[in-house]
Length: 324
Image 1 (cartoon, rainbow, N blue to C red):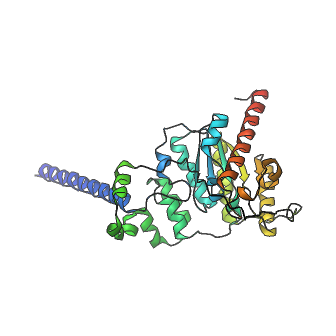
Image 2: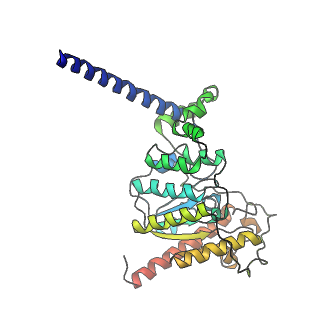
Image 3: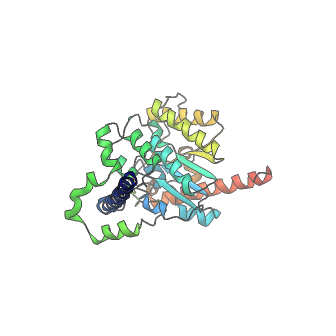
């Protein structure tokens, strides 16, 4: 009698597990169908997962200051290095850390390049739109759960990040053919994460008043915590971490923040490339900007070319030094 009860319980358990598995798969598929597709703001995340494993040499991270500045296509043409711009709109430093962890699940790059504009942001949590663009299309994993916990303050609100269908179920009225194709084919945007912006001839950048400021202003404690984590992660995985700052219009306070970041990088033995100090070398003109914060596509060509030369010089120096 006991054996028959045990057999019955095992059959029920198997049926329950099968039901739960099917239900979980349906939730996952529905979530993929209903979430917003595409992304006009850098990497759409899905395209990252389409990359062949261990195919990248360089991965860029950061905000729009990264994905409008560095073109993987140009960098590969000029250096032979394959890269991807894993940057999203206003990507905070704490999400950058989890993106780096996510990267290392499938890639083994020699370089992480972090555009540091968001170091000066002092918000503990970014807006929902910014957070969802970064996290919604990440594959569910312990890393994503940790990213959600770091990015969303309200515990109840986090539930809709764990199960996207809770947020997007009402989109059934607006579903298109592309939603189904993207959900089942998991097809991303083929741009390497780079967004080329149109030029505006009326944009004038003048940083001459800020070039001589030496005072520093420390970044927020949360940004500092995750900057330290980023450096530790790169060292543990033997990845060279490079800090960069894309060209933009500065002000006094922002300049002081970037002075702190430069000193912070130097204390930790990191290269820091401040392209605001390279306007003449880059030959940046008004048509090379989309607005006072972002380069246009022509400016990105110049910045990507400069970075390519930097990488070629680094490789040549490594050979001279007898490094791999």
